[in-house]
Image (cartoon, rainbow, N blue to C red; front, top):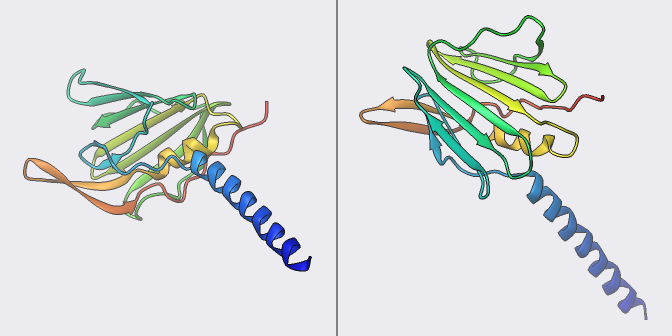
Length: 171
């Protein structure tokens, strides 16, 4: 009788672990780089929608996430100025020689401005909520350093924004 109870408890513990793993997998949308820029690469997941534009001397990516929300990524040399109403959340990202600042622009919108040697990534995130902020964090944690090399780029394993955490604001 005691053996059967122990087996049952171990089985129930396994079910809890499997359920937790499924939740963690849904929150962790980690995808290795499948979009490459000059100073960084990042990954988007199956079901996300990516649109790329070349308006002038910069690249503009629009992403609609399948979990809700969106991102706009500017890659170039002259990003828009930060609105004076924006609130600086963190400067703790990237290498010490990089310029990196995360701002809260509105309750559900954040803006991340990252610079390496005059080349900028300006990442605007919209639609952040208590239901999806972990997926947004996972998306940001995908970004890796890249450097130009010949006609392509070389990307490192080092994650740029691994220390950043977006936390949704109460209404």
